[in-house]
Image (cartoon, rainbow, N blue to C red; front, top):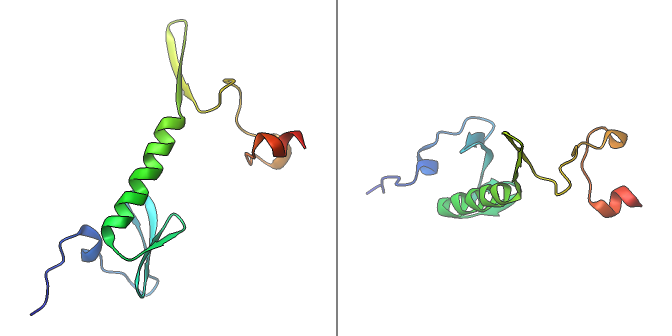
Length: 99
């Protein structure tokens, strides 16, 4: 008797190239599980945990700044521009920028 898939990932039909977008992230089907955000897992629930953890980390990194009567969001602590034009827009650690 075949077990009916219960998780949405288990219902995805992967094509020749076993990659799709799931919850806004690239999801690759492996022979023994899945890969999402560079992490390999064997259970579909683990995929959701990784995505949830990444989303929480991104949410926690955004600082809302209230300047006068307008609000804006940024994720740097000095409220400056995050793009490093010297490296083509790549953002490195503060140590990389200073050294």
